Length: 134
Image (tube, rainbow, N blue to C red; front, side, top):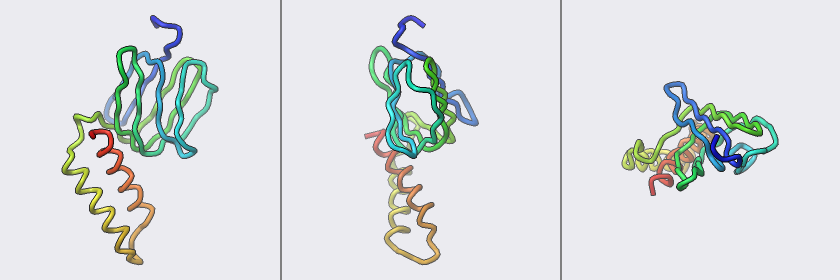
């Protein structure tokens, strides 16, 4: 590690190592709210909620759409086990906008058979994708 203010970030999905490197800070959503992590953070494990993962490297921040998973936060490293995560160039805007419209239609219909939690989760995922590519 070249800089003592940096820490190691590793983001893993079932298919690949999405990201591994030394970072200054990382930010993402948890079930308890948004969290920002620097080296020396209090150790904890959190559940990830849909939102933008902001990776602050030396040059400039990088953003990704992080949808769900768990994170282990230690003082000198953070490991995120992500179910789904995407770089902006991996996201199809039309597909995300179509998913948003479908989820919104299900919520607006207020049909008794609609799984509201599932529709809300689909809407959050679509909005996250759209936001990260905007």
